[in-house]
Length: 213
Image 1 (cartoon, rainbow, N blue to C red):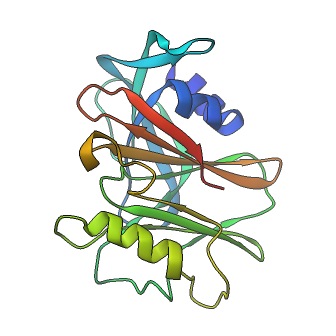
Image 2: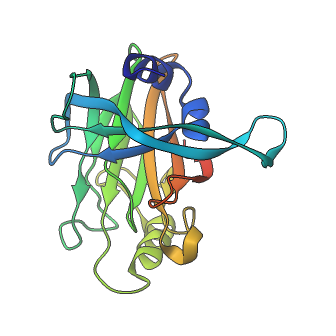
Image 3: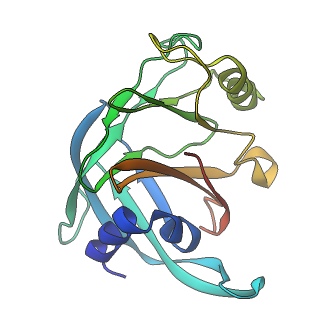
C-alpha cells in the first residue's frame, strides 16, 4: 500500500486500516488543521490476524509512520486535524478544553500522537465533536487512574453531561501495561468516527482495535 492509498483508505475505511496496518503517529504541539507526512516503515511489517481464521492464521502487513514533522525520502504530505497532547497539570478533568472538529463537512482526517498511558476523549456537541488527548502524571498506575477519572468525571468546559468516547489504559492494557496505541478519526458522511489501535511497540503487532465514537 502506498502513502496515497493509506490516506484514501483512512478517510473512507478507517476500521479496515486500524485492523490490518500498524500506525505509529507523532502529533504536533498545537490543535490545528495542519500537514502530516505519511511513510512506510522500511523493512518493518506487522503480524496481523487473518480475515477468516483470526490469530490462527497470521499474515504480514505494512507498518506506517504518520508525523507532523518532515520524514526522510520522497514527501507524501496530506492534510489532517491534529489534536495535541495536553500535559498533566495543564487541564481540569471536569472542565476540559479540546479541539472542535466541525460537522458536517467533506471527508477529513483527525490524528493525534501515540498513546503510552494517555487518554483520548471526545464528545459530540453543537457544530461538531470536541476531542482531547490527555497525558497522565508520572508514576506507576497513573495512566489507569487518569482513564478512570476521565471516564467517570470527565466533562468539556461549557458542556454538561458525560463524554461520548473515552480510550485509555483500560482499553489498551496489553503487555502488562506497556502496550502503545494510535487513535485516528475520519469524517464520513458528514460525521466523525474515531478508532483506537493497540499495538506492541517492539514487534509492531496489532493487539486490539475498537471504535471509540
